Length: 207
Image (tube, rainbow, N blue to C red; front, side, top):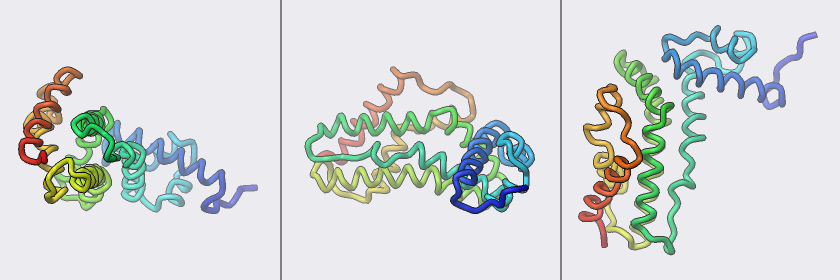
């Protein structure tokens, strides 16, 4: 006798988790259009009907998979700040964590999926961007807002401060990485990049 699925039951939650894990792996490997609900169902060990029961369609499953990935990766606690810290060191750590996320193999693969969606003007591109890039931007902006409140830096539009720092950290180099013209910077190169970016940023904003 077949068990009827009801949202929230342990077996349903386990199936949902398996489906999301399978979806993340296949979307990364094959892109959005190269992935089918059949493939995801087979990888997750469930029926295609079960996948549809949980996620309605491929677009919704894609956004759920991206959102979960970003929630797991972009933990707000990574960017917390208090009055007792050495601000330069705290900012260095924040920059290091941001670049670690941006240059992770999964993030680079997801960027290419984003290009695929943007090229065809899919509404999924904006949803993807909000779940990933905007989430990181907002966490960094909260860090700068707190830094200004604590007197470490001059107050300004925290979103602008975030965009400025990311521009200093990434620049044209990041486009070359995404286009596979150059490799991801190594640890020594990243340290140099971060120090230069912080130096220029603090020339404008240090109190």
